[in-house]
Length: 349
Image (cartoon, rainbow, N blue to C red; front, side, top):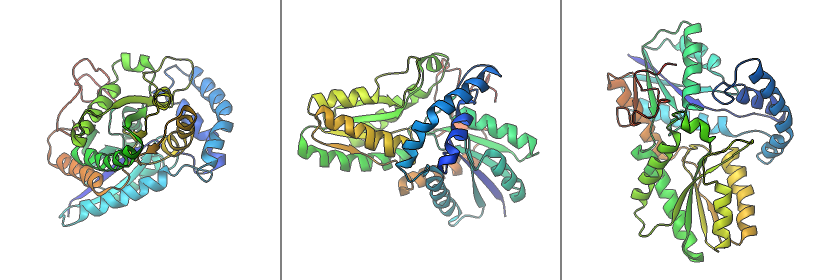
């Protein structure tokens, strides 16, 4: 029986309070995040991680001391594995590779080598491609796989911002939240995604454009007449100019207009600090202070059946495709202006 390994990529998160500072260091020591040469990047990562650790520990304390992202990813792994192996003549085995905390790609690679697959499919849990997330994870995997002498043929699913299962799962919960919020007036939907510095977008990163594609697909799926919605970006830090509008600014604006708010995380597929604390606690407080009569955060898609089936279809399509790198549509969806796209013939990992 043919054996296929599927690698799920995510950022990872500290599992306990003592893990917070080393997690932050790993994050900021990534060349895709702090785009400076060593040893300068090392020194800056060290400084930022020391300064931000106390604030971050407070955030993770609100979630029981650590991030739930690994647990949530493990649940997605199990659901996807069950779906893929149901009535299949192929054995699919799922492995998790986190970028900044355990299990790292090195741990996943060791398990993959022991599994000895006939082929490998790389599946980032980032619907929208970015050089700071998807490309960084894939680059790390290829480096690790080479070091571990993993030579099985490998295919990459680079992005799926409009994948039908993903959109259906998010649209269903968004519609429910919207209908509840209508009791308090005409709701405004904030489609919120993690932000990026403008200079990264200007350098050819397609993330913002793909977020726009997700929002358009969601608006089409919701089919709400005269829908009031805004794509906005959260989690900005540091002195650089970030892409706008900022989610917290839009929360304050809607509150000042006494509008019910429905906040939809479009770039996270499992709940963690950015949804459970930043959106659901910190921004809720902003909304209440500003005067919004209602504030609802739609949960991330998690293990919603439509989303898991959507991921499974991506994997099935990849097994049958001749392409080594493809989006959910089977080909490149970024125009030639986005040099950061890894499906570009000139791109390299």
